[in-house]
Image 1: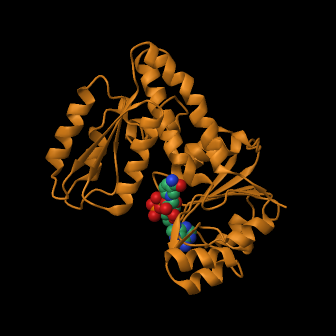
Image 2: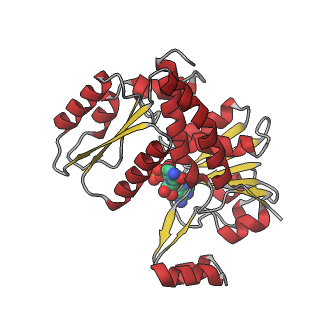
Length: 306
Ligand code: NAD
């Protein structure tokens, strides 16, 4: 039986560990503060931002949301960021993506001061990641590292295959694994014979955005499989095909009209891996916890406590 790498317990551990650190900052008169900027009315972004703000408040951190209209200009957004860069009580600035199409997203990203770049997306912090120097790390791959570490999964000397080369997941994931002494292969949409490459992985990370793309042919028996993908299935036939005979999932689909699946075939992953992150309930839960951790870490650095 494969071990289920439960994101919920890791999430709780991380949040619990933050509480005394936040209390120590508060005792010094320094409540850690995060501002999230959202533009337009993308429903998924609204849910993400609401959850980020809620978790901040539950931990006793300062949290603000700046909601801008979908017609916002690049100049208006830059003005907000400059104001936040100058505000002492704000440690982290996060701009929820995607931004409306008329906005120059790269200019916005570059405007966030690297010391307040809580997502770790600014080129300065990407450079720090490559150099293995301290800086905020991209939250989702950092969450994967927490799952691996807290489940005592050996990384040193292992072959890690990361499928996906995005700036927010695939690339930072590869560097984080490399710095823990894995031999890393990065695959993407143009990689020839993807199943054969994946089959050489001791640790297989899927960050693709294609429902259940990686099936048994991609998984070396006994590999550790980390499924970062979050895909919504809205056709019953897809649910039947992917969750073969899983009455619970079909019932969930019939009730809600959708179910979530990762980038790895859930049944094959449970059968062939030695350990895996379920979807939902795995990596997805960690992103907000790592955002909180980054905010606290920035606040500690700014008061000279770290
Ligand atoms: P992206 O679209 O930016 O990148 C996808 C990557 O997958 C690309 O590098 C592409 O080359 C690769 N790819 C696409 N099709 C492929 C194929 N057929 N074979 C091999 N590689 C292929 O996506 P992203 O932002 O990196 O997100 C990836 C997945 O992770 C998505 O499902 C997303 O929803 C999920 N995600 C989850 C979290 C979280 O858990 N909180 C956070 C971010 C992203």
